[in-house]
Amino acid sequence: MARATFPLLILFLFIFLGSLVESDEQGWIVAEVSEKGLDFVKDLLTQKAESSLVPIELPKIEKAVHVPFVGNVDVVLSGIVIQTINLNSSTVKTGDSGIVLYVSGGTASMGLMWEYSYRSWWLPFSFSDQGNASIQVQGMEVGLTLGLKTIEGSLTLSVLDSGCFVNDISIELNGGASWLYQGLIDAFEGRIESAVEDAVSGKLSDAIVTLNSVLKSLPKEAHVTKDAALNLTFVNDPQLKESSVHIEINGLFSPNNETALSSSHNELPASSEVCCEANKMVGISVQETVLESATSAYFVENKMHWTVQQLPDPKYLNTKWWRFVIPRLYKSYPNHNMSLDVSVISLPKIQVTNKQITANAPLDVVINVLDEEEVVPVASISVDLGISASPEISANTLTGNLQLNDFDLSLNWSNIGDLHISLLQTLASTALRSVMIPGLSCVPILLQPNTPHTEGVLSQKKTI
Figure (cartoon, rainbow, N blue to C red):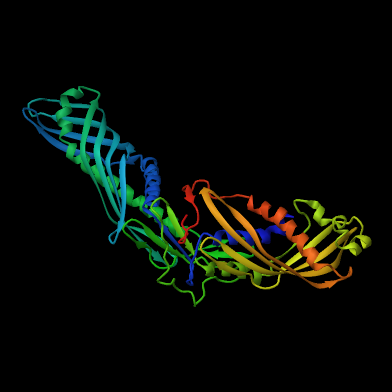
């Protein structure tokens, strides 16, 4: 049953997804990440950076310090490691210069080993000592300017500018007579600050290179089923607006053995826009071409036909229930189970309106009787089916209501005498409205659990 009804569920899913958008232009999928969405991504990356950037090992620092009455003292700082980083406050802005990420008030904890040695001309032996130290970095500021481009269908992220500034550090030495040598280590404060700034900047640049590799590795095609694929290549460079990022995706469906990107669709119309309200993280506009390509892909692959052998209420697929409507059926096959072969005979017509989307599909339905192990076709009916949907997204669940708009029957042929089409249409329509449609409407579609929570209903510009 699951396999038999899957194409029908796919058709209804297309209707649900299509209702999220409204556009009269030819085109594909346009997404606009709002300032709220950018803040969500920024906070996510910041939290990830706090754990992934550390530990950071800094190079050894050596310095000769002149001490009155002693002479030159050779001091070495080694094993310098930034152990923790806390990025307290961060902001993200977009504009012509790129995506600017700024972090202020950052702190870090460090550890190192110190040692010194010196020899005086008037003493026959040398002096040395060693120990460890802990360092607290305060008021660290980090800035990143990132460029976002589309190259060969993939998003490419690059570092246009980066920098790190340390306002203050405090050093506490342990071991030996360290309290005597605090002044010596204080002379290294500037060198340590510079090393921290260079190391953090370099580590962030490396992280962006890694993130760019992840973006490049994103699939350019998603096989929705074994029969249809969705083109996920990015089109045109992202537009960096004052407080949002505008991204365009091909988004066309095709049979798995074909490509969804044709010569007639090499760029999105310039007028393709999506309005994302301030309280929404992401606004999405899916144009009718996407829905048309989806239904066409399944139709071309001859996958819009299925066999129905079970219904939520099994009485509708038994000849006993139809004994007063189709007497000859029950007389010829008393108390036999039935099945339906349903086929879409031409491309469904999809129309997007302000608050919902409608789909009209012409069907051929063959009524079968299961006579022991034999499937016996007894009649064929043409059906004009019209369905509409008005979905909503709440948190990370896609829900909505399906509605049966049109349901017209006509007889193709019958081996069980003349059928009372008007009566059959009334009963079948009642069964659809009372059993099938409510059952599908009540099934929530759970979105990716870790995606941003989105709330709201349909509006003219269709935002999530």
